[in-house]
Length: 229
View 1: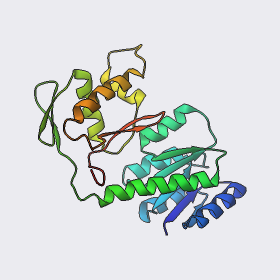
View 2: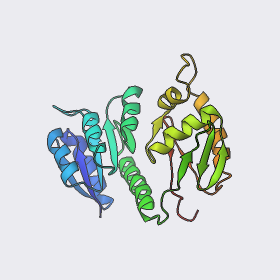
View 3: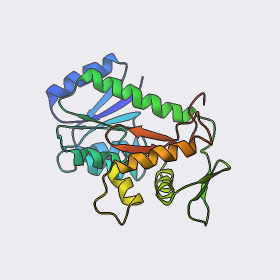
């Protein structure tokens, strides 16, 4: 049984969600006040937090930012907003997933299962993080002892991703990193460079998915080999 902290307003939605999560085998603690929730997340971290963006006094995004400065415990954001900027901001701050209202309680339960499973796999991996370094010569990277010849753009992308393993970086953020001087470059050009970078990373280990895609958002660096890799 996993202890889930539900930070949300609205009794009707909360009741249905609590029922679904109890059925899925979770223990639920419901808090409506953002300040109280922040204190609980920092002092008694749950297995996972479901965090509403729209909270009184302090927003869910502000809470997430403060929590991420001290903890990496799983957080799934809940929001009624459809503004893409809010969702992207949540991922930039370190959210593990994002669910827009109205949502199916059963879908939320499945998303919790997926996030917890992913986190558990990382914890169980005995192998330490794969070492990566960048040489003094531009375009040179050494991953797990293997030399990688990179273009300038690939090197900039790899540096940004590998500095924060597991954290999702949005396409817009990666575009700023790899094309700091460009003003009219489409974000999708990042996909092309990531594709080429993945081919080079595969020469180190084809079984390891070094760069994880987050659909519609961006990419994250996975510095530890997956189970069975």
